[in-house]
Image 1 (tube, rainbow, N blue to C red):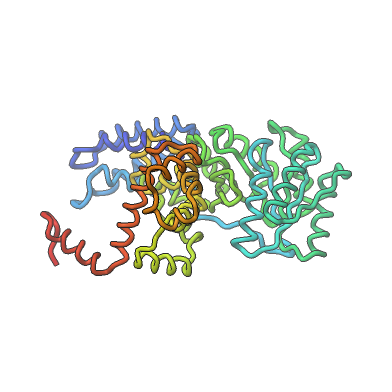
Image 2 (spheres, helix red, strand yellow):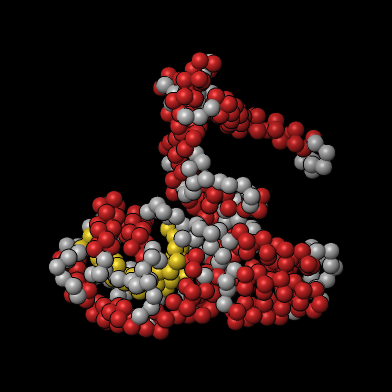
Length: 448
């Protein structure tokens, strides 16, 4: 996500490298590169110009401290301005009411129906709500089917009426149904078109006037760049939505939509979609997105995802097994499955400071862990519990069963042994103290 923009920002800041102070000349050179980076990312021209002007005013008005370089100061100023450009603080959606009503809008193909399912899942599992999904796309039977499939998958009820062709009546019936069946949030998925047209706009305006939603969200495909911003403006002029949802941020997006929408329509980005799975939904945090754009990673989001999958009781059991040197392939497989639940591997790597640049040319597949799982699943229960049993003939059988090579099996065994040794060492306080003493004894390490 935003790899190209990150690389171009880094290139721009190199202009200041070696300079002892910020001057109007070197700032102008740097900001010329910054503006070019923003325009290449499909950011609105006016927005890019205003952004660089604000950065220039801030940079020339600040003194460079002895503890930082001009390049570091420029990075800090750009970070602050990026946060402001994207809305400042995160914004929550309003799902309060009896019931709370959330109206979804957007073009066909933006991911609106899928996101409706993700939002229902989010409200159900993270906010303790009882959501009702409503199918109001009367033009595409496939959209109604898709919502029912998602509802079944998520165990969330879906309201639809295939005989009724008036979306206003369907939405009104759904709200009555929700009230009489104790649903406290209603998510109304409306029809989209391939392009903005008067009929669609009049229809969604009529639905909004009839059901008076507590929140109206505009869903947009972030990969469409500046077109997304233009569409957002057209929708906002007609229905005055409350917030934006950016989908497909896990794809090859240039970032123009994320950086321009708030400035153009003055409405906050509230959610982002980061993958195909139903839990691939995040609240939009401008500060964290600015971190990622400037190559600083997103440690807070990474920790939050880890905590969501963290089970204290299981962790205690695992620690005891490690201390007794009983860590086996069953435990190893369990740890891999927890990592998978956190999201796709490439996205997780991008959250680590400095890793986005380091892994720029490395192709990390979403199914990178599947090969490892296949090898482990090809072992017998006895072999998983006792890896020392794995001799040459057993390794050949495992390789054939998993469709991998013997070399890959050997590589996994080595990784497993290295992991087990490291975990055993770190679980023992005496070993940790010994490691610290060794480190302090090394040249350049401060004493205690």
